[in-house]
Image (spheres, rainbow, N blue to C red):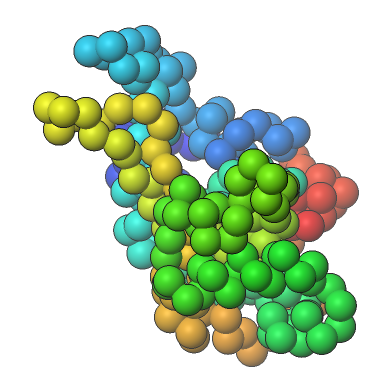
Length: 226
């Protein structure tokens, strides 16, 4: 049985061990941070008037640690990918192509390109600023979550941290605000370099997960790999 997650260090170790770890339950038993976390650490009530979700508060430090990548990568839901596996993951999701090649082939919507270009210009950018720069507001562009989710699923965008608002006493409150970036900006341009073909990368990932999750069938794993 896998060790339970009781700290952000435990979370990071599990991500590195699995290589790929969705945040939420997904149909493959035991293959999620949610299932590996004791209930009292998933949510344990209110602390000083702020709902306390310990494991959720660990996402930012783990995502910014340099050991893994975070984003909506698994069936449009959040999860982590260990650094060792990022090149193969990007190779599969990008189909071995550059963003410019995707755009030339008509595989990218114009507003997706405009948003990603904005992220690249800033290097990293918080959600409210990104929405403002790309005119996602009343009477402006619509579908922000759809666009950023699609770009994450395709491997062009990730979340490198969460920034919390502070009250007048300097205490954090509310939900963390996502800091968007690209895999290349967070880990270096070499992260997108893979010596394998996309199909070879897929099989490498599949073999790795099959060994760790023998109870999962090929259809479940292929659905997870996208």
